[in-house]
Amino acid sequence: MRPLKICLVSSECTPFAKTGGLADVVAALGRFLGKRGHDVRIVVPMYSRIKNGGYEFYPVTEAQDVPVRLNNRTYWFSVSTLQLPRSAAKLWLVRCPELYEREGIYTQDGDEHLRFAMLARAAFAICQQTQWSPDVLHCNDWHASLVPIYLRASYGWDRLFQNTRTVLTIHNIGYQGTFSADVIPALGLENERHLLWQEDLSENRINFLKTGLIYADAITTVSRTYAQEIQGDELGMGLAPLLRQRADSITGIVNGVDYEDWNPRDDVLIPHNYSQKDMTGKLRCKEALMKRFGMQPDLEAPAFGIVSRLTFQKGFDLLAEILTVLLHRENMRLFVLGSGEEKYENYFRWLQETFPGKVAYDRGYKEDLAHHIEAGTDMFLMPSRYEPCGLNQMYSQKYGTVPIVRRTGGLADTVEPWDPKARSGTGFLFGEFTPDALLNTIRYALECWKDRSGWQVLQRNGMERDFSWDHQGEEYIDLYRRLAPAESRASAGGSSTAYTGLGEPPAPKTTTIVPLAKTLMRSARELAAEKAGKRGKNRK
Ligand code: ADP
Ligand code: GLC
Image (cartoon, rainbow, N blue to C red):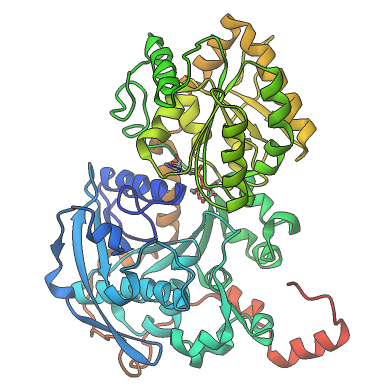
């Protein structure tokens, strides 16, 4: 079968720009697809941290000073490229200093909508400039979610995209990119208002993720359980009705792990390597971790780890209810790495001051410490309210660090409960989102920890689990192939007339047909009538 041309569009990609799992997944998927012989381009903004990160990149000569019409004016961008490390996949970095050269990856600035509209528009413009005809534009999260509507509204005329299909992956439905509808003209969608979700418009909103979910040819999310959960009202976060209508187009594909980065046998970021055959290095990592934080080394004390964005999603409110009790009673250690909402940062700071020598908290973003905590602790805590997939529970298993997780999303799909009689399972799970449920589970884990021979089996079970992309990645390839129209096989790569985004595009030669969108769209009049009938029932 011919290799596919896959364009991944993402706001993050490891190691260049990362705030969480999205970055790891995009890089690892790109790497996997490259290894399988597919032609992969990853479109990412050139943030200051990438530009000044000491990377060696090269200008894409065909894509310099490319104009894009947004916000009623012209923005110019240029593209640089570099190879994704250890991979055949290439990055296409979109250099548009006035939008991207800021301190963070995400901002609270008034033009955040433009920053990511530009990402989507740039993805098309680069393909046009380089005459590269993607089989699939694979968009990730709300930041890339305008790609499907732009394909339909602004680029469908171009033969280059005649056979291009879109996949939208939801990594986290908690972030939807909702802006005032006043930005619609700035996004270049003024003439496409009829294609937007009318109920949102009537409430003066536009929701990037929702817009993408209407027009993407296929929707994926990062675990099977989460694919079901988001179709329910509790975890659908306002998008469940739409997702239920698109149920046939939704696939749950559990994230994989890049074991070249995350494997204690040859991890260069941990002080001592180890493997199932010889776990001495793990103990030495534990000792080194305690020393790193100025603690008295005590290898008998069970050590717990947390590496996380400190947000509502991650369930730390539960921990705050129980940790003082545990820390008073148990000779345990806790290592926390993460930043985020101030209240959680303050809490862990306070905990460290209250239990010196038992709790260590680092609010930085430190790749090496993240690896060291995985290697140097005995148990890893993820009491998430919801978790689309989660990566750390999979990393933990490989590092012989037993995960304690809430049974939700990808945590439910990737951690198997420990059964001491059958000696099967890889971790500990609790269901109810209550402090008691978590406390009881941690207590049970501490009981099991005392049975050292059982614990070794539990560790080994986890270390033997294989979450590599070799399994998971094939599911994406199957999906891409299912989407690719048969007739595209020969013609992909055909020429086009480059349209730079300035002025009106030529009339479409082909249209991407999204039949579902038709059924989803209701006229403003219908909505107004419906609303008049049931006021007060609107979603927030
Ligand atoms: P999410 O994407 O919701 O943040 P995941 O479990 O999928 O959750 O991925 C989190 C990733 O981010 C992991 O690779 C984890 O090690 C990393 N990470 C989170 N916080 C930090 C931090 N402060 N320093 C280093 N790595 C971090
Ligand atoms: C998200 C989710 C996390 C998932 C990651 C990568 O940010 O919160 O559960 O693992 O994306 O898909």
